[in-house]
Structure formats: C-alpha cells, structure tokens
Length: 115
Image (cartoon, rainbow, N blue to C red; front, top):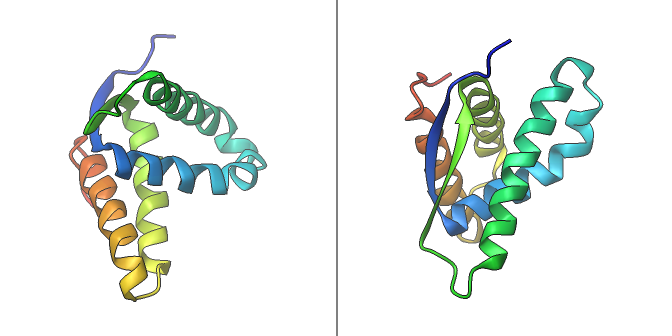
C-alpha cells in the first residue's frame, strides 16, 4: 500500500505547542479507541518529532512546519474545533483560543472544508 500524500502545515511555535499539549491531554483516551489507534500513533510521532526539533534549537523559531496527511489533518481539525467550542469565555482563555484558532485555520488550509 502506498503512503498517503502529506501536506505541510505551518503554525507559530506557540500554537504548535498548544496543539501538542491538547493532543497529549487526549492521547490516552484516543489510544483506547481501536479504530483510530494507528492514526493517533502516527500523529503523536509527528508532533513528538516537532517538539524534539524545537528542543534542539538554541533559539526557538517563530514558526514550525510539519507534514500531515489529509486524514491526520482532518482528525486534528475535528479535535481542535471541539476544544474551541468547549473553551469558556474569559480573558485568560483569549490567548489560548487565538492559538487554537490559528491551528484550526492552518488545518483547514490543508484542503478541507470546515466541519
């Protein structure tokens, strides 16, 4: 079977780290869902590689670009969209919401319409 095509996704470093934190917080629950286990593992590998790359930098870059397949981007987009709808309003949440919106926008640019 051939490898699905991947598309580059570019996020600010902070938005990428928020995405990683969000995914890490859901990882154990997602891993228990057998039908998405392989997809979850592949996303975790990509995000971990990105974090390791950032840790190797003397000065973190402003942006980070990483490859996602359409199914990976779609899965993350749905996850981020769900979290955005559940994020309470408030000044403290505004920054997090803006980074999550940045993630959502970048994932939508991977060629998928909004859910």
